[in-house]
Amino acid sequence: MRVALPLSRLTVPASLLTLNLRLADNVSYEQASLAEPLSVIIQATRRSRCPEPGSSVLVLGAGAVGLLACAMAKALGATRVVAVDIDEGKLNFAKAEGWADDTLVLPRGPRVSGKESLEAAKALVPLFEEKLGNEGFDSVFECTGVEVSAPRYLFVDTTEPH
Image (cartoon, rainbow, N blue to C red; front, side):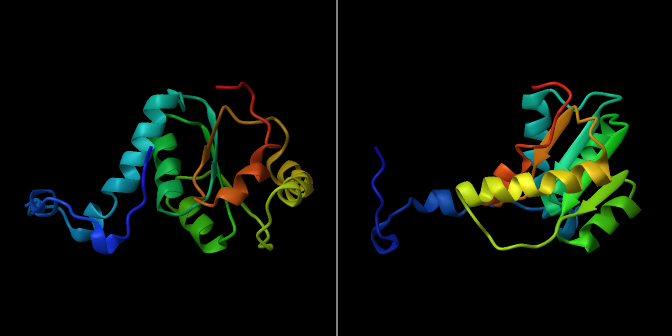
């Protein structure tokens, strides 16, 4: 069982807080800032054992993790990578870099939960089918970081469950 303590009463050994980590001289701060998001995608691809060469991949969310998921999918040999986001600029970037073959801009809407979230998900099905077809995907990476968006993608068909 975990007990939440007020931060004013939390004590941590100083040795845990004073790590002397240094970047190698040839690593910029910009490159180093991608270490954590990249580790997330490396772990996800290792655990799921996908994507495989020749597969199709749907990446939901085009933030740092989503963009790296697109790039990783391409690097692992995926032949079709589709990125989905509400920010057209991020999607244009993914396509310009060659990390996404196709993109889909979702309409911004109010944040909903529960039954309303499932209804919003069902409403997006025609948009997905119109823009992306209905042949499904071999792998789907949910990288939005927004919990209420997950039900929206329950209706995205995959060719085979993993």
